[in-house]
Image 1 (cartoon, rainbow, N blue to C red):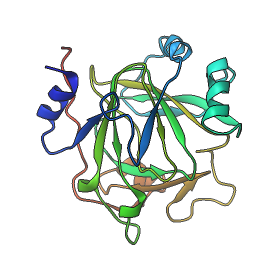
Image 2 (image 1 turned 180 degrees about the horizontal axis):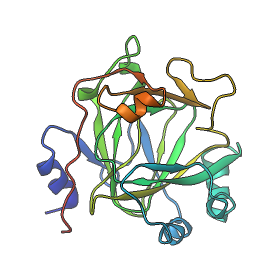
Image 3 (image 1 turned 90 degrees about the vertical axis):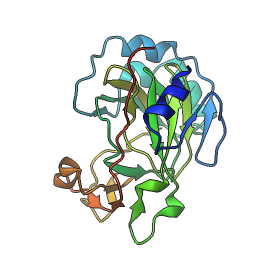
Image 4 (image 1 turned 90 degrees about the horizontal axis):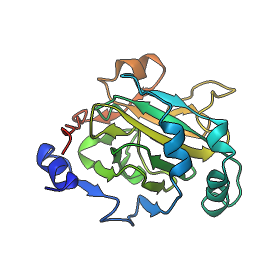
Length: 219
């Protein structure tokens, strides 16, 4: 049984696509990258249980591959390349940027994605979300306004991904949080079950189930 088939069987209420089988979509597109620099750097990081985001790692940001992505995806708009890793298994919220985001999977992972057009009065129904499975070494460009949040692990309860965004994205706002505007170039809605997100100023706006991804044992 393929990993995608096993994920779908373990999560029957969630539509899960595979980046390999569905490389082009209204929310994203698969991009070809030389993942070696990201995988090599990721090998020195031990993901913890809690979700951790590091906006900028100079090893990645100054790499030739990041510079190539900066040109081909972002049109030479200066970018930052960093990390997201941890053991999160639930949706917890949805964020969006008014720019593309590139995610390089350094472990097998699933992204929960949605359309910004489905937000009504700062409310989003989690039932509209879909899952996207990325194999280790694959990379995806999320289009501007695509709803997403931290990846979810497929194996071992931990994930790690390289995150490339326009420089300054996700840094604190000079004028403070304002509604869904949570950080520089970051808008966010959180699920009412996400106590940590609410405590950090996230606006509650996700209705429905706080989707749980059931990961897999090693196949």
